[in-house]
Amino acid sequence: MASSLQTSHSRRATTVSTPDTYEAVVVGAGPAGITAVGNLLDARIDRILWVDDEFDGGRVNKYYREVPSNTKVKLFVDFATAVSPFRKIVSNVPSRDRWEEPSASDGVPVDGKDDKLLEMRQLEQETGCFLSHPADMCVMLTQGLKKTPGVVTQKGRVSEAVLDEQSSLWSIKVATESNTPQDITTAQTKRILLCTGASPTDPPLAYEPENLKHLHLDTALSPTKLASTLAPLGPTTIAVIGASHSAVLVLRNLSNLALSTKSDLHIKWFTRHPLRYAEYEDGFIARDNTGLKGEAAVWAKENLEPETLPSSPISKVLTKIDYEKGHEEEVYKAHLPGSDFVVQAIGYNRDPLPTLKIVTSNGKTKEITPYFDHDKGVFNYVRESDCGTIGDLARLPGVYGAGIAFPQRVVDKKYGHEEFNVGFFKFMKAAKQWVEEWKKVPSTGSS
Ligand SMILES: Cc1cc2nc3c(=O)[nH]c(=O)nc-3n(C[C@H](O)[C@H](O)[C@H](O)COP(=O)(O)OP(=O)(O)OC[C@H]3O[C@@H](n4cnc5c(N)ncnc54)[C@H](O)[C@@H]3O)c2cc1C
Image 1 (cartoon, rainbow, N blue to C red):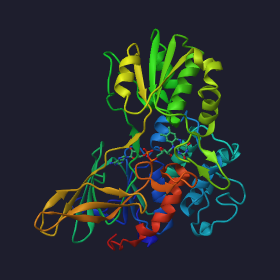
Image 2 (cartoon, helix red, strand yellow):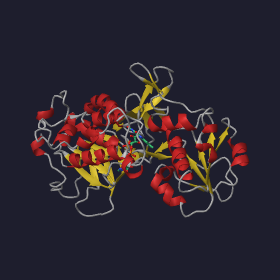
Image 3 (cartoon, rainbow, N blue to C red):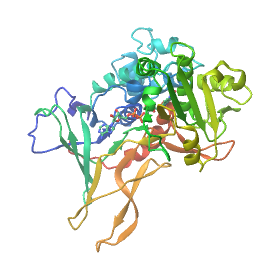
Image 4 (tube, rainbow, N blue to C red):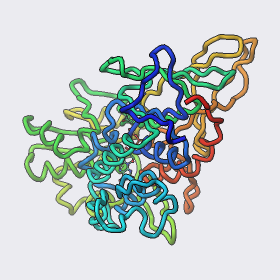
């Protein structure tokens, strides 16, 4: 099969009127898209159309390079050596078969030369690092995957996917900026992997005083952007809402500024619950996805807890406002006036998906809402019966999800609550389980 494959450089020999058919279309090239392409190739599903508007590592590279990681360096190394196509890219060893069987020296070139993970391997493995390191690693893997036979890339956004119910074939549209004849703007496939990511949520507040401006969480997570935004301003008060990992990182960035170059900065911290920490148990981590970890956890313990805040230098620049869920409006009315900015660190929402439609057996085209199954990595939709009545929830054929937008559900081993597994290595773990499902779709047989 590999001999008949085209790379990005040799594609589009056919006329534009017949869309090419791919074994899979992967939407998004953040860590999840990279994971999906690596696992598809590993499973020998290898005529892949990969679409993203930048192919530059996703949001982690664009916005979070200065953020300290909440995972250990060794997990990023594990991620980059988890599948054979990645190991080949990392080590620059030409034969794919060379890496079929992972060994103890996973991905480390035998002669030690050309190891593209060298910098990452030289970092302390048991602690965190700045996300600039895994971001660079994503760019390196992306560049390698783009050159891998069987992967065709197109810059742009998948805007629509229409399922022909009878053939189970999806027709997709790609919106491109360049609009050249070489662009792939339509394609057909039996598999779509949605790795479309998520962005900070910033809804209107229950009460907002006049002149309060919203400062985006992405800006507040970057000490450099934060400093350049605030430096030209006079005395400034910033309200921070939340008690998550992101909230603590923002409080730390702002406190560092207030205690160094911007002494006229004051922070109001609005929190509805005590800080929660990940707990390292024997063989597992409780609150692995929801608890504070890494540098954020250490800083929070030293500066934000009821017993440490009063004696911390942070108390000079930060006022804590505790309240109960449901009392937002009264609390904001009492404490927000006088604030210049608000930063909400209250979670991330899925980025918009391509429009999904279905052509039913009677020829009607209907838009559908996909519902993700966090256990199986697949989607369901509400099927209409032939007479137009709402039917049962049915499996949406050939569509799969991965990444921060579509994480795997796990149960916390200590507390028993449900969590969503978000992180590079967790995306990899999920993909390795879900790839068996991705394989089940019958081959399109027409590449
Ligand atoms: C502040 C913060 C800190 C984190 N720290 C860590 C950490 O320490 N360790 C760790 O393992 N994880 C960490 N994560 C979690 C996770 O690894 C990242 O959020 C990761 O960037 C998510 O990857 P993704 O590929 O799912 O999404 P994204 O990075 O958002 O990538 C999605 C991509 O899809 C593209 N896209 C979207 N729609 C379309 C479309 N229609 N057509 C084409 N392309 C499209 C986007 O342009 C983007 O490039 C952190 C997350 C945050 C927010």
